[in-house]
Length: 119
Image 1: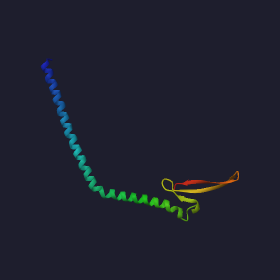
Image 2: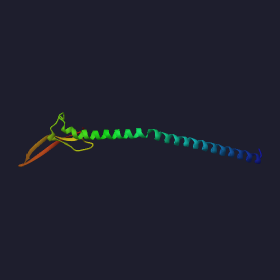
Image 3: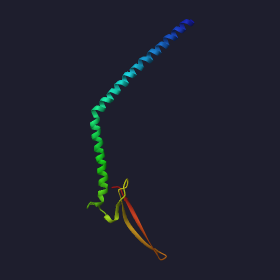
Image 4: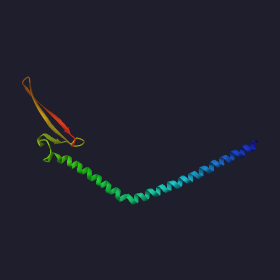
């Protein structure tokens, strides 16, 4: 092969690469446009459902928090209300399980043992 033939072959190869690049770039542009259109259509169709789901989740969270705080006052609560206190997230309540009094060198000490409940 002569040098001019190599230049022609190289030019044809480069033109082929350029044509392939432009073709695939155009295909990617079409796919991106289609995806954007599908996303916008989905947003329009599902906005109400997404809002309803958000409100329902918020309600569930609020109901859970209220039930954690109210559990101490229910008659089914297995411990004395005087021994239990609600302290917040993530621990639901603290309950005094034992009070130990000791006298050391004439001084009285009182120690409270607590248990944590995840209500």
